[in-house]
Length: 129
Image 1 (cartoon, rainbow, N blue to C red):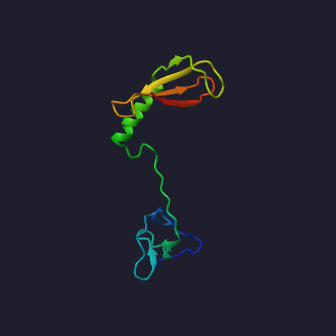
Image 2 (tube, rainbow, N blue to C red):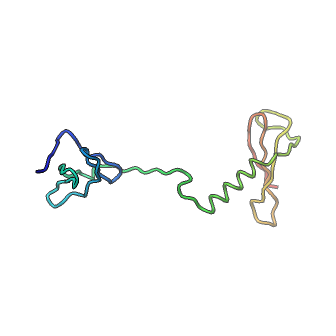
Image 3 (cartoon, rainbow, N blue to C red):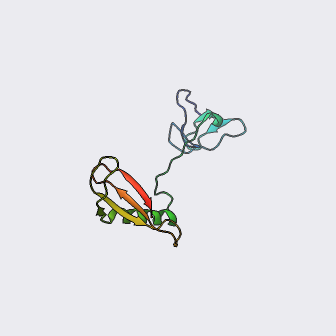
């Protein structure tokens, strides 16, 4: 004999359906549009999956890639490097010195890009040399 509890509804996680009585993973509805638990015989009318909105999220490290790892290594090297100071006034706050570092972003026959950061107000600017 199957039991049905109208006040209880199956729990859903994404597209998985769990029995509210025993927590068993439920099969998809059969031909008679009933969801039946194979463990405790709980039954429920079929769920309209068209009404569900499934949203998935992942953490940044969930899908590692060689390119992302390389980019992270370069960015951490830039942060770890002690920046040199130059007597260049900050355009935003007027601080007399700015920190700088250089990177080769364009082709090899062109100059490096100089990145300036104000140690006082954190203003950032760049100069293609």
